Length: 567
Image 1 (cartoon, one colour):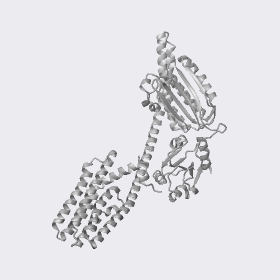
Image 2 (spheres, rainbow, N blue to C red; image 1 turned 30 degrees about the horizontal axis):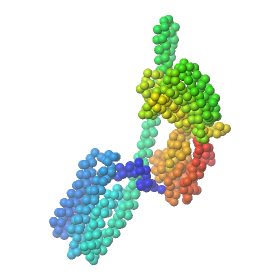
Image 3 (spheres, rainbow, N blue to C red; image 1 turned 90 degrees about the horizontal axis):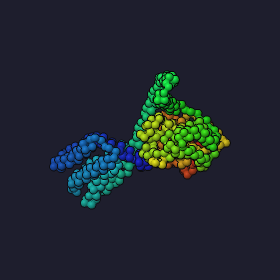
Image 4 (cartoon, rainbow, N blue to C red; image 1 turned 135 degrees about the vertical axis):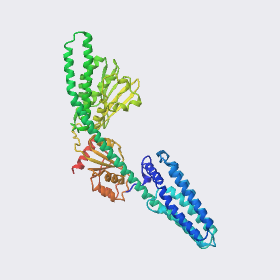
């Protein structure tokens, strides 16, 4: 089904369509003026032939003046274009001008109407009708503007003939009213097609921008990879030489001050090595698709390992480490989880209070296991909390402390790959809590990741009722993802991307299943999966889509997808 502009998103597509209509109105102002002047000159010529010199001059002056007003409005008052926030202002002005133009045309036609000169009256009415025929043709844009023109010109003239004239001219007045109704109906269809074409064009442009953005991101990533590889290669030998020189220098010094200075030099050199290591590790996450090794991870055992590992450091900082475990197990990649928690604990000790407290806790509900690390340090201001997950960004207060600004950004990406989320909760003076939310799965079933790269086309809702954002979920599996609110959007997007989906996911779409042609066309490209209940399954959709229960967790959803893709 082709998407109706009236049913597009009120915050995005509908506004985009209005903005595009305003742009086209302004862009076509000169061409429209030429067409109108042709009709005006033709009518002026007819009036001159009939010997109505004064009437011809008045007609030419008034109508030409309104054409000039239209041109000045579009090309002079708005010469710099139409800002998005002023689209409605421009369109309202356009309606006013077209309404005044229509009233002037009607007034002129009424002024020449005469019961004794029926032919002249008929000619005036026919020319008036000819000026409104553009709105019933293909390519017409902005329906309110046309309705203002047609209503202000045809209706007054028709009513005048019906009330003031009789006989043939009264019948002609009734015909003008019928013609007005015809124009209104036909213009609705023509405007609908124009708006559909605008929507399709905007979607195509958006898809092209996304493709260009993706290609640019790939180019930047390739350059980044080459840069990081060159840095790692070129710096490894000097770093090793520094380490050997520091060791040689340390063997030759004998005073406490000199040893302390060597210690500071060694610490600086160690920070440089750590930065290079984190930089290379971050780059590997972008380049390599890590095959997750899912296993049943015992949370108590994991916490015992972390407590034993960090107890000496806590002792040195006089920090009390509290461990609370209300979860038994989670099926995930233990290497990734340990890496995330180690980083969170290291940060809690580094940025927390000397002599303070650090808590590590595990909680669970029916579908999720949450592993959190909390400190009672200075906390982070609300406005800066999102920044901590950005690569190479460090808060001003932390500049004096060693660090690379990569740790939490890597942790969030690792969490995404696990199908989970990493969240932050902090308040100034109250400390900071970072929580890793992981999907809980059957501990007796080792879930294998969907390793092959697939392309999923989602139609309907962009966010699952139970699994969250579809794009985030499939991105964590390294799958390609595209989304369209309707089948029309999806079809246009596929044509723009020139890709064939491996599976089509239907999540509570707003469908007109009576229009089955496009649905059948998409169903031929890939298997369709209908998620959850409550979707209209009448018509062809019932035959083409495979219904599955609303997924409660990633594990069950993975099984359902694997079953469909393997058939």
